[in-house]
Length: 207
Image (cartoon, rainbow, N blue to C red; front, side):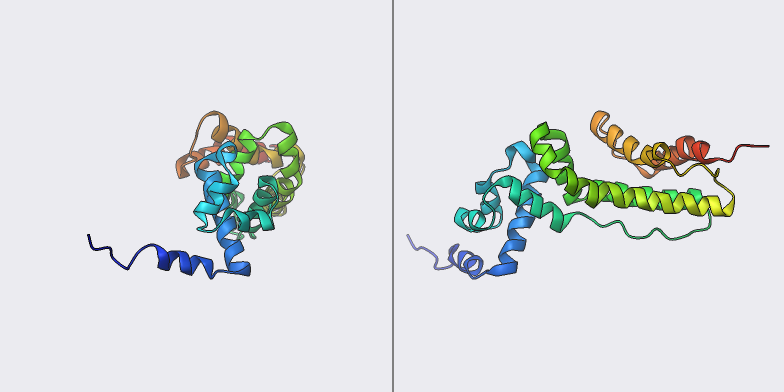
């Protein structure tokens, strides 16, 4: 039988030449992929190494545990919510911001983050608490604060609306519906969230 000389060797040779930041990026990407497919409980260092097409030793040299690896993968991969454009009306601003949050939630890093939130035990979750708060929760709440404050300045939002209960409403609803109800948050559902929950909360009191 004739054996082709074009075996898997070229791919392995190519992967073996990766060094430094290129190899680290491949490993971090593989960790995010693992979290999004098999979840926190199913993620192994061996599986990440296979996904990155490298050896297990290369992973352990950089990260002694999967907690260390996942923390760095999230830091590198979490989507950044930038400033929301001022469209002149609080409803439109909230729609844009909520869609951005939805898209981040269903991105690859978003699925990875949700697997940690849903699967980690309390001790494990504590390891990622600061990362989640500083990387996801606080930026989202700050943008909500800006949108609502602009609405107050325009006179379309009640003056006392910038408070913790109002600012938590959208993130809390999105996480609850995602985890408990399996909602994918279509554009129509986002419009209903804004029109039926947020706008009544924000509307100035008549008289």
